[in-house]
Structure formats: structure tokens, C-alpha cells
Image (cartoon, rainbow, N blue to C red; front, side, top):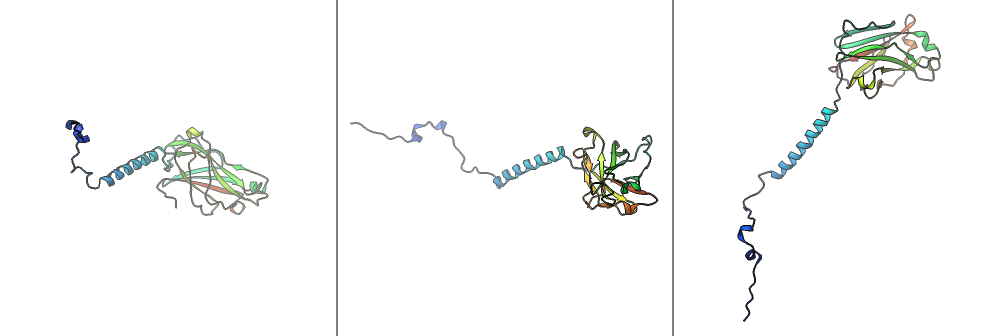
Length: 212
């Protein structure tokens, strides 16, 4: 007589090789939420590290040292309450001529005690100042080499004559060596003339002066 026995898989495997799991073992309370929170925190840390590598801070002006080189003729510079002011006297007759660009002499601005050369540029709103009736725009040009330009934003504003300064702008001159104001309304240089000159004023402001 042939007897047939059926063995289950459990019977065929040695007890010592069977992995046993305690049925009472589960994720701790809120385990799934904790995993998600941990992952989110890792991404936040990555974002913070990227921000540290790519800072967007404002570089503040500092007073010129006592041994700073003298300014060129037609320029005047003051430093009060953390604001650096540069005034440039421009011959008013230039705004009646065919000039396509009027540039100031190069002057130094000290940013976090680092000397950085700049110059102011006046651009006509038309092909030249005579055709534009003396209307134009003011730009701030950084003359430092790209690797020597300050890393960070510089907050500045312009005014002409006794007219009120316009809202300040911020520019990173290490990435763009020409800074412009957000207000693109043309300046009327002829109307600002006084005693044969137009006084163009630049203000470089500290980081504490928050731009609106």
C-alpha cells in the first residue's frame, strides 16, 4: 500500500530559518508624519545652504579714509549719517548741444571699507541732448573689474538741482556694471540749470535704509 503525505511549506522549513515578526511592532504614533517632516526639513536645510552661497545683501558705504585721493574738479563728496553723497557740476550748455553722452570724472566710493571706482553717465532721451530738449536719463557705472566689483546690492538714488531725489534702486554691480533707477521718467536737465551749471547728485545709502 502506498501512503501519500502532504507537507505544508511551514512543515518543510526548519523553524530556525523562519523570520518571526512581533505582531505588536508598529510605527510609533505619527510615524508617517514624522518621516514627511524629516524630509521637508532636509529640503529646508538645502534651501538655506543655497541662500548662504548666493547672498542678496546690501553693501553699505563707509567714510573715505583720510589718505583717500583727491576728487577731480567739479566733484564734491560728503558722508553724513551713513549716506555717501557725490555732487557733480555739469556745464549747462552741454544740454543744448549735440552731445550723445556726458560722463563725470571717475570718483571712488568706499563700500565696507573697500575702494570702488564709479562714474555717472547722462544719456539723452533722443539721439542727442539738443534734439531731446535737454531731457535724459542718469546711470551709475562701476569702473571696477568684474572680479573686483563688490558682491552684493548697492542702494543708490539721484537728484538734479533742487529737485527731490527719486526712489532708490538696488543693483549688483558684480553682475551688471550699470545701475539705473526704476523710475524711467526723463530728467529735465535744462530746467535744473542754475548759474550756468546743473548739479547732479548721487546718494549711496546703507543697508539699514530699507528701500520701499
